[in-house]
Image (cartoon, rainbow, N blue to C red; front, side):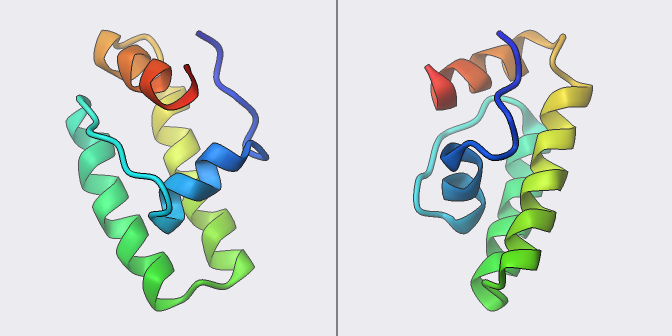
Length: 77
């Protein structure tokens, strides 16, 4: 599965905590915990974008790992 663009609403929904998923990739779980706290404390557009960038980068760098591929399917179908 290819990585959806950063502009996809799903990225924002995950970082802001509007949608929650149970991820299999540990790095995603750890990063997302930190990002959702950061965004809840500072929900500015810049902070949300920074969170999306970080989350996207983790998925992009690890897209070859089966658990990451499963997480992407869970999010984006």
